[in-house]
Amino acid sequence: MVEIENLTNKIVEVKAIAQVVVQNFGHLKKFAKHVVAFAIKQINGFTDVELARFVGKEDIGKLIGYEKEPNPTVFSKFRERAEPEIFEFVANVTLWLEYKDRPIKLIAQDSTSIDAYSEDDPDADWGKRTIPKKRQVTDESVESFFGYKLHAGVDADTDNPIAFFIRPANRHDKKLFGAILTHIKENFRIGHKAKYIADSALDSFDVRRELRYSDIKDLIAINGRGHRESEIPKDPDYGKRWSIERFFSRLKEVFGLGKNRFIGIRKVMIHVYSCIIAYSISYL
Image (cartoon, rainbow, N blue to C red; front, side, top):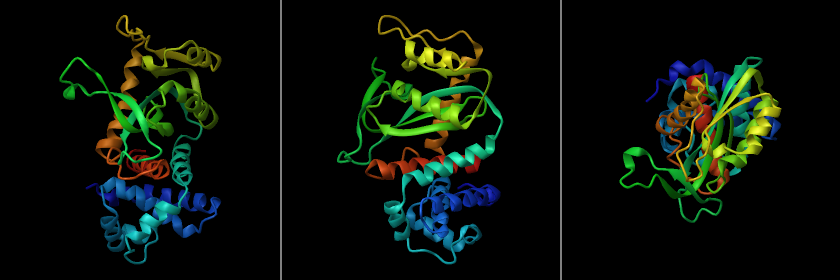
């Protein structure tokens, strides 16, 4: 369990952000405590029952607004009512305040899989993902899965997420390139001689042209199209592509991203954004 007391200052900061955001969405300010509680849930790997007990008994619960132990059904009801965009906006504002005018010089883009909780999930779809080497027992390196993908861009110098979108698993990484780049350009300051790092999934004329127009150097692997091995850029900064893998790994191994227990993209979004808020509380 993470020593949550060591994160108190950041939790208070996120609560203040959430209070503004929930009111902008037409909710009472008191609902902000649930947004913060969902992040605490991911930090400590709680169930809703364990979360209710924790915020009811620990000082941090009182600090974020719980006067007594809530009924655990409060969280499921809030999950039903709340707009995923509330969590998305809180996650984004937390990052914007961290960066302010600090320039971003290295951007890395990739995606990671999120398995659907049920094959009856109406919003999930079939997609492809790379099989981890420790699970590869044949020459096959790709497998099908049913669920969603988290598409993200990170600051490759810090591993911090700076753009993130959740889509059904059949959406190719290239389809989210425009949304990710636009979000970063509109909300962050891109530094002089910035570079954009990606694997061969983004190898296309359109992507490279857009980066050139944005005065960003592309460090994108060349796709062998099945005829030869992909060719990675010789620029040493390409090695920082692993920053986004570290981000995804922390989300899954530390904050429970892969433990999706929800059906429908709205609830899955709340789960994912809660994991990202938990990441920001812990690492920013």
